[in-house]
Image (tube, rainbow, N blue to C red; front, side):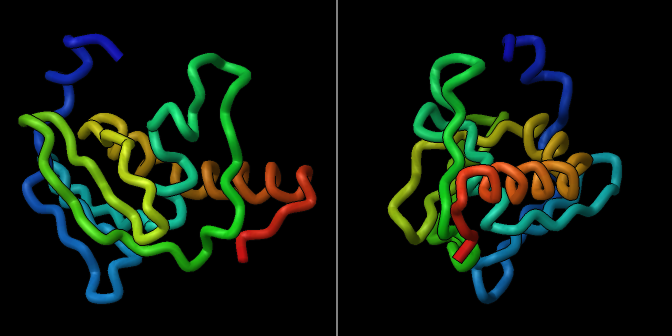
Length: 124
């Protein structure tokens, strides 16, 4: 991501965490409302721990079906850092990344489930 990418997507007008801390509801500047599950955000975290440092280094965290978000902190004017109750807290989710995840939510989740199956792993 370049510096110019950070300015393309304006800050959401609202970010709300569900009472059970398992869903993040985001209202984007254009009025679009998206709900993103904690599980999806955790397994697709933009952190090096999950994404690695190269195209072939992505990991597939298993057993995250019941993960919840424990804290959300702003990062400048362009992102949030989400801390999860399993201790993961190193991913910085930019506005453009969150919008991308909202658009591709179903396909990202399907790909995750396929990767787990290929590994013989479970969401549980």
